[in-house]
Length: 417
Image 1: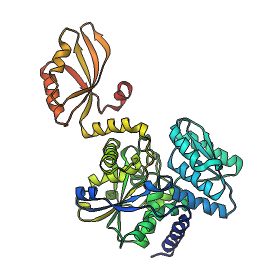
Image 2: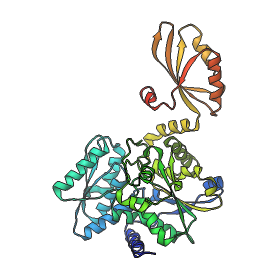
Image 3: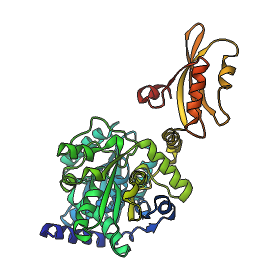
Image 4: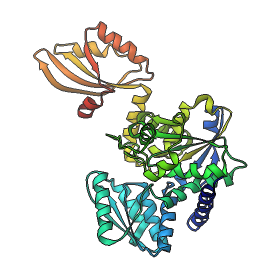
């Protein structure tokens, strides 16, 4: 054990102890449903049950207490979600002020939650349509006022605060688990836990899951340094980061690629619904991400003791229709077609007769008449089993209908669905 590693664990334990000022350790709960499914001992570290329903309070609290010790009383952050709420909660606790910059497009629910957590201690400024614009405005404000910028992940004190998750787990169970499974976005949680486990539980493995549309860690591992992704799917907003942190990557740079998994966003939706319906657990997309990746681990977890960090539960239920839609598409039980419909009496009836007993029309819309005798129809179909679409498409071909499956065509679907 190096002196630097020992020092990191000592400081992480100090951060964990300080956190007891504001909340007790989050629960570590054995989950029988997941354990039976994967033939393993699956424990959930319920960070979704922290005071702000995510682990982000840990890093914000620890970074803020150190800055206050150095004389800082004014803080700034840029965030549209969990980090903003953690900063707001910590600012109110310490009796300091925080200016939270959020994109203009931030849902009202998140703005109100940040305001509730911070009360008079927090000023919210809505700036920019995109997060990069918001971040630029926040950093410019810091330069003008001399306020302290609280990074959501790329800060040593934030990393130390997030490391407290691992230390709590070790205190809550007898002996270390065989494996930790957690999400990775900017890298604050994963780097903190990895650094402290090197000394506190060197035999414990770690699986890192990132959204397929924001796989910044995998890109950095391939390049050997942080790189900026050309585009990011923001659906998993708690982990969809275009560029992993420089400080966090210094800790993660030797993570084996076999331990990093990219998880499809649509598939995560099936897990959000499953955990809600089967277990009554509300998880945001980033919180469901490490639960979902268990599907990819197979024999690597069978018979093992596994701790899954459910990192957040700030789910806006206005997103539920979108989650259901994406889950059905992931499961292959919902598809969208562009169908060329003959403009003659009985054509619609002929089409309807091709549908099976479990096929339901979820959407039917004439888009245009492409010719005098034909019209283009957007049709959405839901069914009970994915294989039903093979039968339907065969029947459409046999019936002389011209059609195009646009379910996976993101560009086209964006305009017509």
